[in-house]
Length: 489
Image 1 (cartoon, one colour):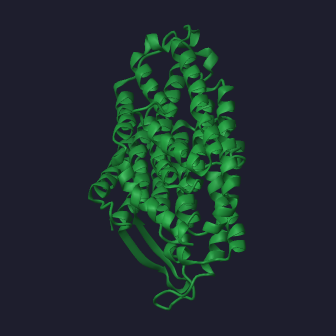
Image 2 (tube, rainbow, N blue to C red):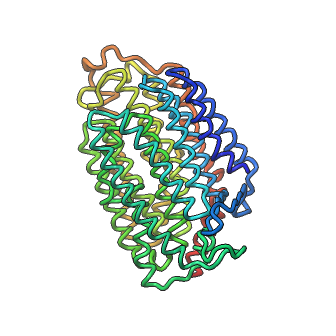
């Protein structure tokens, strides 16, 4: 029942926010997110890493069709539920720095989206997974489309179009797989959509080759992988900062998680056939994202392309089909979520104080904001993958996994560390250490509430970097189960 509570609590809180008007909705929304965090923390503390699935709940949702409201958590699911529960309060706190029209609706949509995200990470039924996948899309569409920048209508429509088309392909793949399954245990339906039943399928290799693309289409758009990425930079730039944090910090992890949970074990021969192509696309994305990031003058857009480059490495790690690669992807999803949310928050803080995100207009912030400088530098070094920070652990394992699969691919993928240092440190030098400008004359340091928001993220930067086994231990069993499902077929 704990998983069900994690699912229902945010949506119940979102509905209750209807009774709060304007700024009065802020505290109840944050309180609801903190309760969700407490529930997720309790799940982590009571989780037994030696058991594959816990906190399960199975309700016969549509008996005649063999569809169940089946949820549960293994170590991989738990990591992403924890990431969601940690970041949503941070994102809500960041939203307090700006005034939004219809704030109760804004915060309700954030909580509603949290339900969709937790649902995706815990679903054990294909059609429930698809349902939650779409539930997570609806709030972010309105968050970006209603409260976004001047080009929000065009940009959000493109994002919605990409996502919905990919989702429909996934639905088609799930429907096909559904009709290949056997009857339910109670005999009420000739087929069922349980995750375990999909794992038990033994489809011919030629069938798996095209089913792979039906399922992968939705994940490719959501991550995104090159060349399905064109919606990402514009959407990240035009969306309000809290929506950008949701997209980059949590939502893109849906695609990586989907590959690990629903793609690799279900169509392993399809994965084997297309493995080299996906790895090449991922590596192209790594290099392309980094090179474009070097050329950016908009801080927010630079971080968006940086995210594209780092996600490419996670995809490459997953498709290396090695334990190192999958473990690296697991912990890097945590690290990337922490770092990118912190980076986007700092970009938003600078924009609120100066009215610009243009790197050329900024400079000399270190002299006026030493606390901001330290926070920015820690998050940036985590993103660059400095040893003892969270980014180092994930990138080391990811590169090791890709290198195990192919030495040359591993070497090329490793360029991401060098290029990442180039564009991020150069941005830091110009924004924080460069000469003063007219935009930064009255710049002020972080407030107490802003520092309170960043401190948990900085703690996680060092916690994951210094004690990675805290998290790797949780995901190890799940990763081995996924690899065993791939190998045995």
